[in-house]
Length: 117
Length: 111
Image (cartoon, rainbow over all chains, first blue to last red; front, side, top):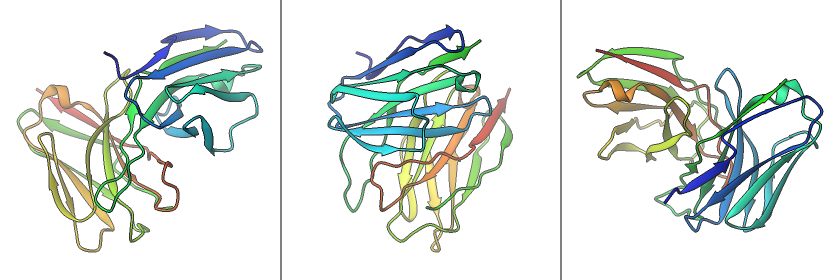
């Protein structure tokens, strides 16, 4: 009954290759995200989708292309992988709730550890 | 966008109370403060959220002074399993889905 799942967990590949990471959430949330966490543990938002619509794109290279076939899935495709793409990529989701007394909270997946050689 | 500043690391011993303070001098009127916990090799996990004064749940307490320029996460009687990185976030009132994580505080709990 995993809430947010990612595949694969580990990904080792060569420079120049194209790879995809898949994310699925079974929480019924409207919004999904991709984050990149580098070796210094800084966690940076990359993309956000709400009901399959892109709402946040944080100056990420065009080599990164998110795809949301439905609101339960947000996949990340990376073209022409570079050494600097090595990081842990986290998928997250959140319900569309924002009131005067509560803000959205995010539920994160286990991460995909990408190593580009 | 309100940026946050936290200590890079803290050490504690089992059974102690740990207080981690976060500075957010530019917090806006409608911004909330949220804390996440991240264990090694896992994604961050929501701990607690607040707007002002004090919030308490089964895991932690969050203290926010009147000027809201800082907040303190309080973990009562920590155990070894509380060793993790703790992130303080201030949400962007104009961008509902933007979350900016700072560098976090690495808490080391020793026996």
